[in-house]
Image 1 (cartoon, rainbow, N blue to C red):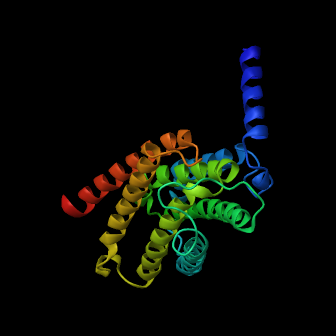
Image 2 (image 1 turned 90 degrees about the vertical axis):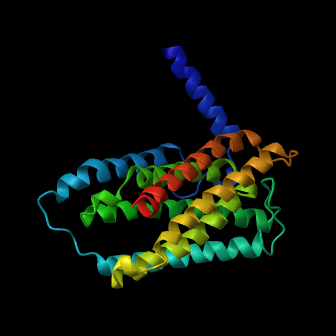
Length: 261
């Protein structure tokens, strides 16, 4: 057992010392893999056990004022990241859509990409408040397996992006996802002031999420099958099944919520 532990520690030490990006090693909440693991563990415990137990004999909190501020903040932060992604990377920038290597240099665009991948990671941590608000408002049914799994998976996956591949091909995920979040949190903001059943474009948010995972899956698949551009295809082989799984889960949700019903 001691030998196994020593081998694991050596592998971990080599991985963190020789394969992580030194530019992001001191970034807030990203210094160690234990940080996101602790965050999502506490999150899971709260939304599944501590929160429901706390609210069992209490009335639901009225968080409308908090939610207005939170949703506006999410819209502003998502819009900022989407704008930067369009300006410097994919739409008006030099990034290629099919395969783009990570630039680990100190060039201004490379450093900007690394910094904004970290900011995107912090935004995924902030997203965890979605579920916490569900619990405090006694809307536990909205804290579905899909919802919780997606939030946990994004925090862990984007941490990997911050420490190992902060730039290049992965920026497309953030570009598409921040656009989806701009629309989604605009709906959440509108729903505070109006009955959600009267918001006709509600179901199209799910379709937009399906499109998001579908197009990202296609993009990663084309990168894997195409010629190498310097981006690690091994990581793509890990992310591709995850995106395919999320596409299938959102399709199932859409069928049960809007077609079968």
